[in-house]
Image 1 (cartoon, rainbow, N blue to C red):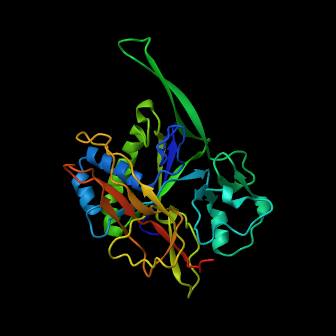
Image 2: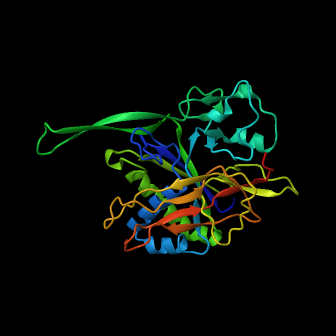
Image 3: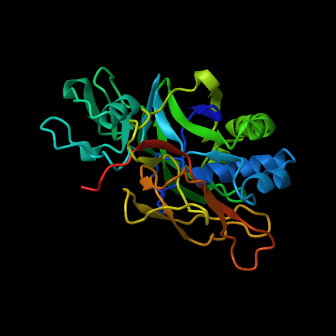
Length: 334
């Protein structure tokens, strides 16, 4: 992973990550890779680099930069959507594995190595749905609902109360993701612009209700080269390789995926356009392979970006389905 950059976002307050249903009283805990790409693209526009960025990513045969989705972290522990090929483990009398959406990376590493699990070392935090070390007092985040009142400027007696769900992070916690560069030349060209775009977004905010100060970050931390942790053990010599997705994925024409094998699920993505000419119009929906899927392919999948602009839009609107994956041993479907 020499061309990888691990990024940690340290939230300064609540975040609102809208769920697929759009319900105000619910919030997602994964900031998905297609949304992250859109946010960075918006920041590249403000930095005067939009055309070059699109040519290098969405419009290129192979993207120069790819992002994983954003997952929780707690101190030094990274959480992730576990690979479907090993999840859930055999039933336990102590841990209800199906109640965990995120799993601590050391636990995943043990599963991938087929090592026995000491269940006394782990617990599942119900509020965050994280399987975490048992010495922790609380999970990395929780979902809460906050109330607001909109006041008419002309008639202060006219008010409109409403509420919205958000996620609030515990001290020392936040979200992490991977930035993958296609090669050293792409890293040299795009490392600094990507860092600048992320710092801009840290000030302006990620997700919903940014005008209320939500989604901002106290800091953005970058770990590359030897400072980037190894996220999973390499497949054993002679074992067939599968590709564990840490991002949403839309296959490119050259991605040779064996859909009759592997372990994967799909999700329908929608969303709205942020554009002065087409404000809040719905993007075209699309089916994507979800995080945690393990794909059978002879080589690392790259993925593609699809134009999902509304009818009549004067410019393309891209939904990024670039793959960020980790090689793991491909296992037979149970």
